[in-house]
Image (cartoon, rainbow, N blue to C red; front, side):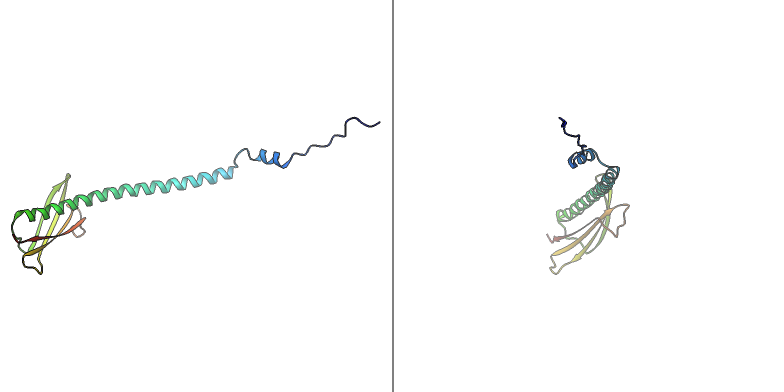
Amino acid sequence: MTPICPARVPVVPSRAATARRRGRGFTLLEVLVAMAIVAISLGAIIKVSGSYTGNAGYLKQRTFAQWVAENLATEYRLKGEFPAVGRREGVTTLADAQWRWQIRISNTDDKRIRRLDIDVSLDEADPDAPLSTLIAFVGKP
């Protein structure tokens, strides 16, 4: 007599089933590598944003120093007098800060025009390292 049911064949899991079972999650090593990459990236982002903030403050100071220099050049132009050759120094207040300025007045090839070299720095800063330098010219009225 022949059996009605064929002999039981052992079931071997297919490769697809095995891959599905293994692909359910990440291994500990993969998670640690991903966390290391994220940590390094965040550190770089924080460093860049910190330097950006510092640069913004420096640019603000340079802008104010440039305004002080332009104001001084405009004052000389509006005085209506021909400035004598020499050096002038002073302190001006702008934006709640004291700004030290130096002006060197010199002759040019044209006797009717004087050159103004204006250096501006913060009062407590080194005057030999100005934040702004402006060259202006004043004509004889």
